[in-house]
Amino acid sequence: MITIKEIAERANVSRTTVSRVLNNSGYVSEEAKKRVQKVIEETGYIPSENAKALRTKKTKVIGVILPKISTETSSRLVTGLDEIFAKEGYQILLTNTNLVSEKEIEYLKLLKSRHVDGIILSATNINRPLIEEIFKLKIPFVTVGQYISGLANVLFDDYQASKDMVNFLIKKGHKNIAFIGVNEKDRAVGYLRKLGYLDAMKENHLPCDKSWIQIGKFNVDSGYQRMKEILDSSKQKPTAVLAVTDRLAIGALQYIKEIGLSIPNDIAVVGMGGSELSRFISPALTTIDFSIEDAGREAATLLLEQINGGNYHETIRTIRYRLLERSSI
View (cartoon, rainbow, N blue to C red):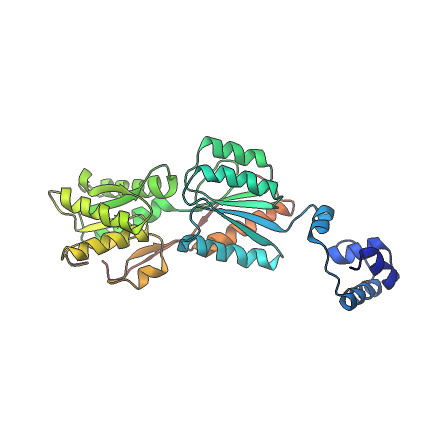
């Protein structure tokens, strides 16, 4: 295997010059650069990534912690991340917590041991031990979807999006609007989307029967079961239901169809997330598209700014969203 020393001898330059050409750093005359590049091409030299990392103090690897790698949201986020990182020669190392919050700390430690250049966390539950562990890292860091004070954050306007969806239902003539949410430990999806629903109902002076509010998990079956609970326990049936994810909404929609009710004539169903599946179910689901790919691109850009010497001050970037009206309403 050819070495940098041998390349320098063949190109009649110093080892420092070869190193500068390989790392694209420092001044090298055009003539010397061409001689070095010619030797590299002729010999097929490939620099050792480990050696390069020791020289540059960069591994060109980014750690990404995802809550559930199999979801469309995670896939769309990684698509946006990779679009930016690939252009800069970075690779992505994915980890999957499978919605087990304790694994977030476990993977933070693992990624630090792998000497990644930075970490992007798509978190679900923000808690003190997690925050403390993040600040111990002292490496470039960006959160997506959840706010942590003092860090770079890429956020969705969960509160306003939920509120907009309820107001949209109200404009369509609905007054009895049910809600299927998730645990409020997830501040963005669980707490803020529920708060948006409650505030919209309150501001429009509409009743909010306790039996209309059901809390489930992040899956289709939970939406199915919570919709059943709403219809079984309510004296006055809702005419519409807002689910905080498309998966929950699809489960609710399925139960409503199974018991012979019409969507949207008997009950309108809306979700949040803008999933690809929401277009193809019957009836097609009205939903909020949060532009997840844009969030990935924004997070990658923020992280690269830190890696390249930017400040580690708190930053908040809020990603746009749009309401997609379809035939479920």
